[in-house]
Amino acid sequence: MDRGDGVCRHFDDRQNRCEIYAIRPDICRIDRQYEINYRPLMSWEAFVELNLAACQSLQQSPKVDLHSGKEEADQVDRQT
Ligand code: SF4
Image (tube, rainbow, N blue to C red; front, side):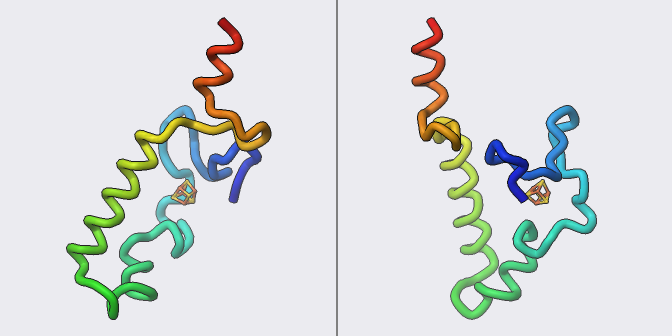
């Protein structure tokens, strides 16, 4: 679903939301992923906690240009 820059092609940058939220695929649905793959392994609460930690980690990670492999901070430094 990559639109070419690492962002999903269904993500609306202007509105900061999924354009197909109501019909998004199962991979985008934490509730479906839990039922399909994780219910035998852990509680719902533990699964949600893991997903929150993963989201927070991704939000704190430096953004990487998928074409060059360079972090955005590197690109900003070179431009200044
Ligand atoms: S929820 Fe899924 S389909 Fe929607 S923007 Fe995010 S990755 Fe894309």
